[in-house]
Image (cartoon, rainbow over all chains, first blue to last red; front, side, top):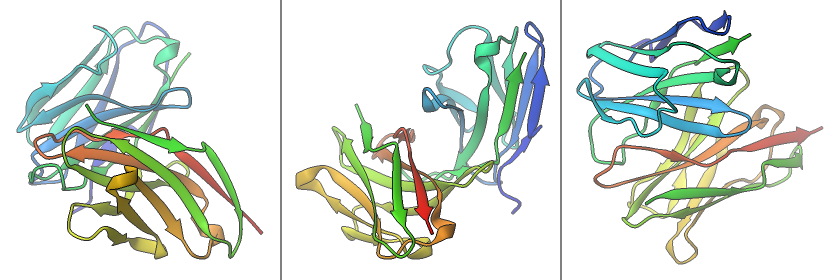
Length: 115
Length: 113
């Protein structure tokens, strides 16, 4: 398996524009997570899905952020409209079922810069 | 509720010296604990995990960690640092019945020649 695949690796956009980040999890993994990493706040869990259903979105910062998982092999994180404070590295991770002891596998991340 | 605290956002060691990165956790359920490493411009990679089998856990690249319930700690060690160990290290906690990871704030390890 190629691992968790995220695209694009880098995204530069202007304030106010819509941004869509994409993730393909590892085949067979039941859980998908979106994290945001910044110097100030570290790694923050934004939302996670189980079998394509959002389970916990309490980490989504505001209504400008939305995430979907239309099928088991694809998820998107959308920011509309984007703001400079959204600049961060966004990671997608997937995890197989198995209580809490299975590890998550991370993608390479998308570095988002909003100017 | 679960949380982890990593003491020291930056740690510097000389090449060949002992590496000790500290992690303390808080959990209302028996925890599962993980250490991840992140190299520059890359995603996180699992180093090792504790899942209640053995309290001393060995991972990749010569790292190990010991689960100490009485101290609520899961410190990461390596007997002899190598230049290639320079990276950021994250401790994370999960628990039975939950599938979320809660990450610490990370410790950036610098290895001096």
